[in-house]
Length: 422
Image 1 (spheres, rainbow, N blue to C red):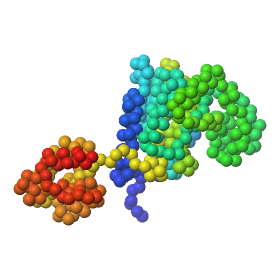
Image 2 (image 1 turned 90 degrees about the horizontal axis):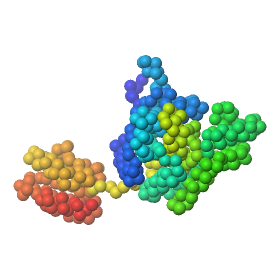
Image 3 (image 1 turned 180 degrees about the horizontal axis):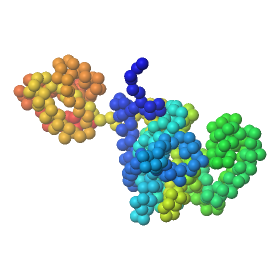
Image 4 (image 1 turned 60 degrees about the vertical axis):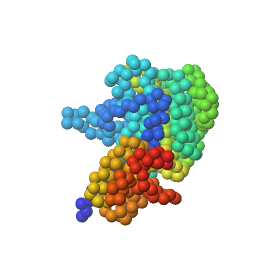
């Protein structure tokens, strides 16, 4: 019997060799969001279960089947967050932030859903999201689309499409629900087990079924667009006009309803055909009634979340890197005096060249073994400090990639030389 300990199924380690891409991507996204005036918010990973019941809706798959929930020692039901909008709304209400004016916030972190793990769909997964509170016009909806569109362009992504829809007001949706239930009830014999259950709990979710056998039935179902209230129809027309003004192509998908009960009016998804079944990389929409539903004062809101694992998979599938890789230097020394001096020099270099990666050899091996480690680290340059360099108050620098001769320089010359290489 093995004593080996493994990670929980569907909860994966991020190893050092993979982390550079994650860090570069996160920095790129954060910088973009900040440039649009968003500020960071961080909420707990654990919330009271009722936070998600009230926000997401008890008839959703997430609440019914996928949450990690347990009773605390005092009897409170607690859950790992399956998404973060509910926690952000709870924080907005608790700290009364909307009173200070429009709030533009972004978050990042792990989410948890107990579902069958597959490529691009894990039990612990990571999202970065943006939320805006206090703006009810279609201009902010379009700005969120523009921001994500700018991100895809900056990353160089191809084969990414925008799908949009409108869910109208709560009243319009209630009227449409009655019509939809009547329609699907007439064809109940054709429904699968999931859709039959949703018929009484959340019939709009039937429209989002992935069962190909139901495609024709869903395609011929009544369209919510035909039951919209006037204000929602106008909002959707304005939203489309902004997208057209921005030259952002879109597809109207009347079956797009999203899996969370709190959405109203605008909903959207950015999808790709390059990841198989898990094709959604970013999704969101408007949830104007959620703040009030969770006990706050009425406050319009809109937001989205993008999945980092899927975005990473898409970057890898399209063979894309993120950001310019910094110069890397391997600092090697031979002899006790040189080892002491090398630590001093590497500290000075880091201060003078903060954007450069500097590996300081800690193996104390021969120059031959240190060069092997420099190659393994894929360093651009080696800085060499031996007895001769030490006596002349200099160091040697050797390019490790491409052409170039080894040269001796003093510290200031090394700094200027490396600045020219960047």
